[in-house]
Length: 248
Image 1: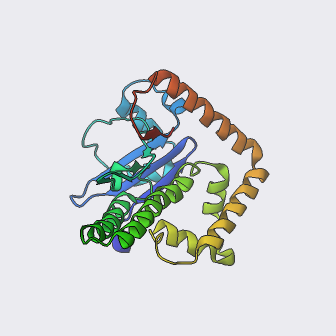
Image 2: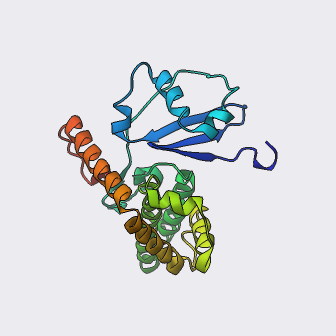
Image 3: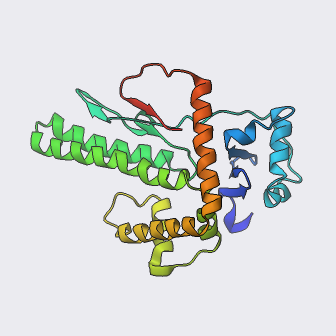
């Protein structure tokens, strides 16, 4: 309510995190992201399991205590992917056609629109016969398409780590790193904003924190490798698909 009405909220719990997305009609989209190992412990229906999982996040449970479930719960696996290239002979791939990452920071529409603008500029030069300018813009397009998903993915695949939780729950604006992170997560990735050194500094702080929390960090890393192996074995051989790689 109030000034925060409509804001998306993320809630951590021991096995992952929740999204909480208010919608215009007064309903709220709520869901959990967790490791395959956690979901293997499910007993009963998906809806019952969701309710049990919500109970593991007290602040979320408090917010939903008077809520009414609109429909049964559903589930899906991790379908993040990226292509090995984003353009070729008479085609360009924009938005989710090129890559999809977990929409944790609601970055998908922004990345899609930005890639559309970049591709349109390149195509415009090419149609005008401005070959040199078109090739320059095509190279920029390649760089832009890889940059966004790469930076967001760095956070997404580490968001459940003890080090990230510690840093995010005890924020400090040392060397203006907090400002740099807010700038990145707000989508300021493609201008000349000088967040690079501060982002590098944040990574150093993160890896140092991992060392100080190495037992927990190693346990999560081992669990992730095990989950990936089990998921790949369960899925069986992947169908041949030219130019596509799948991330676990």
